[in-house]
Amino acid sequence: MNYQFARRLDAAPESFLDQLFAISRDPKIISFAGGLPMTSLIDVAGIRDAAAAVFAEEGETALQYTTTDGYLPLREFIAERYRSRLGLPATADEIRITNGSQQCLDLIAKLFVDPCTVVGMERPGYLGAIEAFSYYQPRFKTVPVTEEGPDIDAFHTLCQEDNLAFFYGIPNFQNPSGMSYTETRRKECAECCRETNTIFYEDDAFGELAFDGRPRIPVKAFAPECGVMSGSFSKTVSPGMRIGWIYAPAQVIEKFDAVRQAADLHPNALSQAVMYRYLTTHDYEGHLERVRRVYQKNCNQMCDLLDDLLPDVIHTTPEGGMFMLATMPEGKDSMALFHACLKECVAVLPGVPFYAEGGGYDTFRLNFSTANETEIEEGMARLKRAYCLCGKK
Ligand SMILES: Cc1ncc(COP(=O)(O)O)c(C=O)c1O
Image 1 (cartoon, protein in one colour):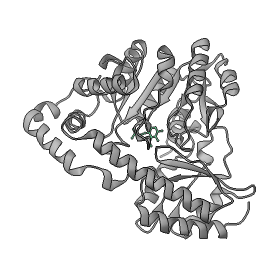
Image 2: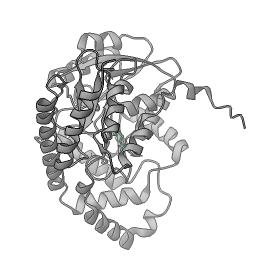
Image 3: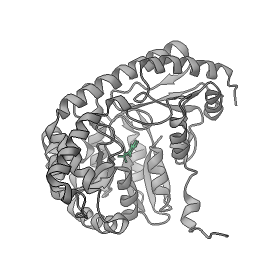
């Protein structure tokens, strides 16, 4: 059969995520390439108890069709957390539960991106967003990010584009670099978005994973009408439950409901009820504290080993999240490193797919949330061997 696939598929980059998940499952390989939360930090017993209570007390409702907007108590929980933690005047009406925050990427692009409209992104930027947006055939324009946030002059220039659908950014512990915007840069970005009527799509997948537990004020706080924010329980509670959300102004939410209903009717009723039960009957703050402590320890260990073993590699030093970005000296190629690493049974992720406009050949991303201390020690030794073996471009 000669299948005539839609032309929009031609615009999509070859999916790296599938390859990543395959690598993550091979037990011989120590993977720093994926983005899984540490399995032992998933509170299986707590979630099991929450699920048992849901089945016992509201099983019929939780197994029935439900509403498109999402479970009201869970939306209220999220809104209250925005208010108390970040000082944002959020209400449940402005929040919709989604099937992971990845679904927000698809649906927000569906709302705002026509073929050839411009989507602004960080350089490097989240690979899963590049993949999701690509199906709507945008032109990507990227702004370099540094330890302070996006280059503000380039950001200004981008916001002047007539045809800009939105700017997508991750101000907290970015994927892939682990870098964060300073508060000043957040304000500058917000001001620029206000002046130019630009949507700032703020993906806050990692905000709760600040090692010091200190909340960082979102860009949306400085320009509420421009801010579309997404969040997720994937990195904090469980990715398999697939609970994320969007927090956006009422006009956006109204359209979001329509496209969301067409996509999959509503979020998973059972997962939402279990998540809410878990969050409200267990020590969520204590759990977050544990996760942050482990990730901070792993991050420090990985940074120290990188400095010792690969002194000519420059790396970011994240203050939270799950990733750091390494840059090799001129002439080293991360695809060659990737293949050399696989021979040594360790995996790193070449930076190239994070660069929507090309580049990043000398960079690779390292995840520090999945492997334990022993695996990090051994994996970094393998990485050193692979690095020494892999030739120049
Ligand atoms: C920056 C960022 N946004 C969104 C997602 C999607 O996560 P989920 O759909 O599990 O919420 C990820 C996953 O790694 C991510 O790194």
